[in-house]
Length: 98
Image (cartoon, rainbow, N blue to C red; front, side):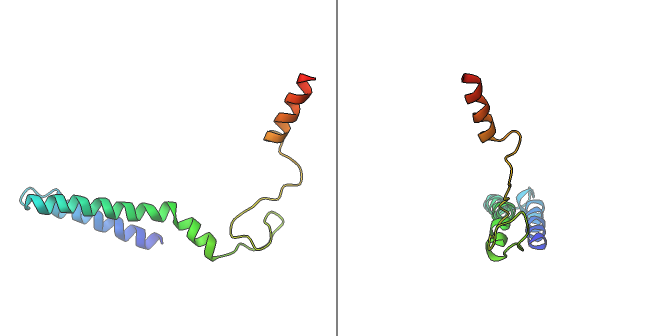
């Protein structure tokens, strides 16, 4: 994924340098180049936002003490609540009210 993302971003920079920011190019070609560069950037950003989710759906994490069986993502199984968890906070508020 990283190689593909880097190649897309390199192509985007080439388009911007050679066509979009070239004052000798036709104005329609320059506008189209800006649109294409924006679409390439959007596709590259999907690697950041959707890439981890796609990998998580396709590959399961191994079973450990912190993950549930057959999960496609990390699901922490904590035995004791955290010292500043919402549940603990609500319990402290109830105790203070009484």
